[in-house]
Image (cartoon, rainbow, N blue to C red; front, side, top):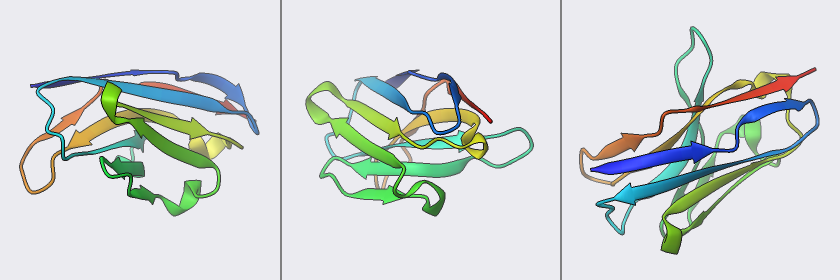
Length: 117
C-alpha cells in the first residue's frame, strides 16, 4: 500500500505563488509517475502536471509556462511550483502516483488552493 500526504495549499492573491508538496510512503515501485490533478465542484478531475521517475514531464496547456513540476526520487516526493496564479486555478489539488502498465494508482487526500482576484 502507498500513502500520499500533500501540503502547501492555501489562499493567495492573483499573480502570487504557491508550492505544493506530496510525500509518498509505503511499497513504492521504482518505475512510477507522480503528478498533480485538480478538481472544482461539478467538474471532472483534470490533469495539471505529471513527471515520471526518469524526469519526463507532461503539463496541461492551461498551466504551461506558469507551473513547474519536480520530484526528489530519493525522498519519494513530488512538488508543484505554481507562479502567476489566476482565479481559475482555484481548486482542490490532488497528488497522484501511478505505476505504468499495472492497476496500481494512488491518490492523496487533496489540498485546497484558492486564488482571489
